[in-house]
Length: 353
Image (cartoon, rainbow, N blue to C red; front, side, top):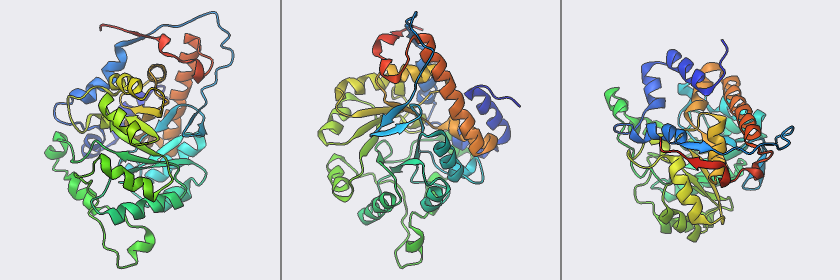
């Protein structure tokens, strides 16, 4: 079977996965307005290519938080990769290491963080944190990932409670119960008297609490889930190192802007003071190009990574990443951009479609 684009991987995964697993991966909040708009919003944007430039060499390399990656295409945090492939996050980490891009590991993994690191010891890893009500647990988690060589802390801000995900309800999938079963203790802690956490996100986490993380780690802190200029300005004021524009794949509050639409507002607000990333609805190389032109330093992929896992484990994830990289190279060449530095807002024209 020859899969040539990300939609091919989606079709394959839909055929292979159980309804429960498919609905979990593809699930959206309420009516799915935001989930669908994440994709259609890209289609409203047109490109203004420049020609008669030497594009015999196109270089998509860039850096995030000072670390070089082979392309501005990385892996967003998503839960329970073993739903798609038995080896779960270990396969995802191996693929990311081989392609030389960043993989953000979720708080809610299928396997121990130590096993993920052992599977891909040379990979660039960031850790996504759902802030816990127990601050001692937060501290232990942060110290643990720092010791394991994770290079940034990505704090999710858009999930003080879990969104209204109807398909999970219809399937009687109690996400809170599944999360509560996840043990966030390290292997050593499991053999001690330390109590297992419930691991549900804290609904009381707020701006003033960020300073507690800044005292417990030297890692760059990135806030994931920012959608407005007001919160972007507060993020800069609170001295974080990055903003990750995201609406949680349309799984949290339905009716918020598509990520690519919110990106423009956030980029304008930060005025270049910190790096801005985004996920949500990226399905082609030209989507990546549009996001970069609108100010994203890098895009992150969620569902397509799980489709790739379903196809061939780490090899499927590598195929997804390499297809998108190849499409980005083509889109850059066809628009006259020889490097990421040459991608600018001048490339963008908004359509009324």
